[in-house]
Image (cartoon, rainbow, N blue to C red; front, side):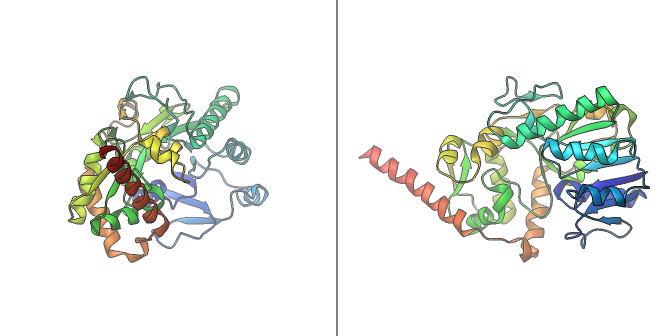
Amino acid sequence: MKALFIGGTGTISSAITKQLIDSGCELYLLNRGTRNEELPAGIKFITADIHDEEHVAKLIENMEFDVVADFIAFEQAQLERDVRLFKGKTKQFIFISSASAYQTPLSDYRITEGTPLSNPYWEYSRNKIACEEYLMKEYRENGFPITIIRPSHTYDERSIPMGVHGSKGSWQVAKRMLEGKPVIIHGDGTSLWTMTHNTDFAKGFIGLMGNIHAIGESVHITSDETVTWNQIYEIIADALGVKLNAVHVSSEFLAACSKEDYRGGLLGDKANSVVFDNSKLKRLVPEFVATTRLDQGIKQTVEYILAHSEYQMEDQEFDVWCDKVVGALNTALITIME
């Protein structure tokens, strides 16, 4: 198989890249070359900025692929560019959407690919929906061979997956745990969530590559394991070898008192209970099974980060904000009890 990945070094794509090279795939990565040093040997690089359409068009002028996957497209205009670049050059085009595009709030917490797409809380999700709609139109009207993949919360060894500030500063939360400081958990911590290790995600993704039954289809790839946020934070604290000092704060309050986009990331995503039905993926990829249990994956991640100081990035502003939120709650409690 000959494949081209736009990106290829992120949380989701890096595991796919490594597994494909191990399988003997002829893999090209199109990126700016700033994060390629950790990738395995055998990859062929096309060094370019995908936003420079004219330059990229010249570089791939005489090339064709079995699969092209764009891991860094977030807006419809970027997909319109991809269609111009790769129409007639690939047998399958894979777009990485997001499970946050599913109906929010859900009418049924059990999610299938037939769950409506609607998220009034998060522009990121609405943009992904627009991308999906555009690509489906291209497939139906012009035969552009698309497959849409919807990841949910996928993690690797470089960042501890969390709810509040997880994507931008997970180390600071872990540091608060290590120091015995209060750690904020959104809501009451009992909502259901699914986290998927990137090596498991890669198995499903690779099974969809070159799969004729996946053309024109939308598929989510997640673990079958469902946990609560309280369990997630307890697992992280246990991996760190400390006792969790949890403070539960409503998602609405966090969204209202922070400059960070908690309206989107919490109200439009993590505050809602979700349970994924992976039946469609397993019909398309019968051998798929997610084998990394969350406590095992978190332990590996924590061990890796503790051994690699470059991933221990502190965020003092967030730390101060956490103390203010906890302080405000304590002050309110004292005032009410007086």
